[in-house]
Image 1: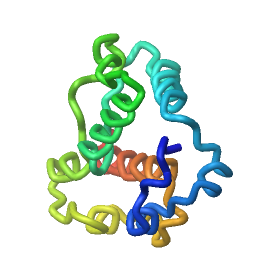
Image 2: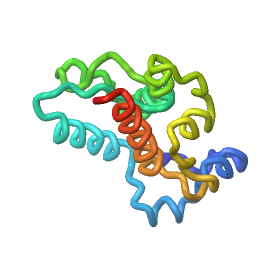
Image 3: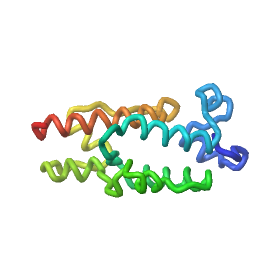
Length: 147
């Protein structure tokens, strides 16, 4: 939950489908708790492997993590120091480009991979739907690469 939702502009709220009551009903937590949950999730899922942050626009997600952790007076790179997260980032369009796909912008890549758009309505988009969509594209690229 943003610490100052009253500062949100109406335009940003419309794009992000933000409303305090909706976010509360979805279980939004304070920034510090969110950071603790991200770290706990990564630690519990890494096992003996190092995590490579991968997403369609991974630099956006890395910047978001950076901002989130800084808001909690922490640094998301602390996970790199633990050997938990790689300092390398992998964006899905670069992965696809290396495989010969050239329609890597907007809906071009999902369409080329035979994957339907994530959502059309902002109210239906959540962090989880975005993550699931990224995972679907990643798995499809691995499949096409013969992995």
